[in-house]
Length: 640
Image 1 (cartoon, one colour):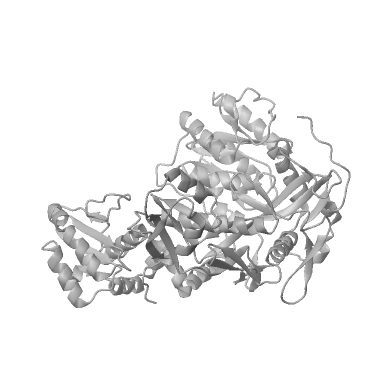
Image 2: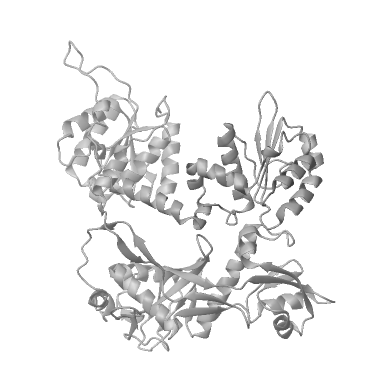
């Protein structure tokens, strides 16, 4: 298909231009950060002179504004004195327009053919489809590319996990041809002592990351075989190749008899090598000490695996653990083991319900107003803060979806305002506004914030409970809307189901809700995040509010840990039915006359693959799970 590049920001268009022309000309263009670019968005420097690339994303401005812009840049182009100048643009160009641009740019342009318009760029995309796939913001215009990418991913996922346990063989020392001992080899292996399957997830995470740092890593997981088949070979690698030993330190690991045997070997080996820091404990639980190496300072992974990795890499560097001389590589057997342990995919399609609500309709324009006379700025700010519809301050004025008469009625007490700009909404989100000095991202952020305000207003009007989480606002079913234990029907098609939105568990009232997060890619939608709010059960319908966020977190982990996917799914659909009423849509008021309309039913996706997971209970059977929905004894609070 032919792209108009409307979904690309200015920087996206520049990156695409560098990739396409670089591939076509067989050269590499340097890229520069956003900001003043000295007349170049890409540069290829050579002894014969520089090749300069300039990208102009002038889709809606057109060829006339592009010509005017290039006239103003002629002096800068001449000052660069490039050996060759290239111009790409999203503005549609006729042959005459290219010729006129060539005359404007001057002798730095070898020919009008070095002006690349959208038709030329589309031809290059067809020629180099891998570049098309490397720029995913193009895909929202091309279902064909999206399907090709998904199909490739599915084929890769369905490949059987094949591999032979050869990783250990390459590390084993060769027997001496005339003696019973092994030939001396370099100690350059970071050896991990672990327990299976307790530590598999952690080691699968840690091993490849250490290899990416240049270390050669070994753990028994790389044999890809269960049981003790490779026990002797594993011990041989430990005794002959280990430069350092990483010991996973937690209770269940240290109680493993195989781990204890490896620790004994490592302690003796450290003594023979005269290395008091030969064993480095990796603490994954508090309070774990290892007999024989109690004085060894552990690397702390309790606070976070990422933080622990940084500390471990620094320790290996300080202790001068050898790295590979050759190019860094990651052993493919890590991924092979991961895939063998994963739930297998089958080539059968499956219908899935998402947590996305599609935006069906938006206003055509967003408006910018400025004061038309003397006004008090502070009074304007206070009035905007209490506006009955979403607004966003911008300079001396503000952005809104309201019409002139609606603004006058809402703000007449603080002054008069005039409409300065009426900007197409989709253009504002994807490209920003040069007139307002906004690039695409700040412009999109402003619209995003206004959509959040409209959602909040909608939920408050319906009597939902508002709760401020650490990074977002959630709205929950209230006692007035959802009495304790009441089940709410959901499902507009086929068999109807029902789910609870409020009930009591472990002496506390739980209240289901969601946080709604607007997004514009790959299409406009709201993403719903399920939330659960708790109150102490004091035998009132509302319960007693809990102020301690740590207690709230503990309750989520304990009360909700038994909820299955169908329970979360059913509650979300019941919540949407509750707030949308009899309507199939949710209408968010952006002004008295303008709305953003959402589909009240989540988007359905068709997955090209499925799994063989057991699925014995339907949604209604799971909903009566007494472990989470009954009234058990009040849980004793821990001493704090």
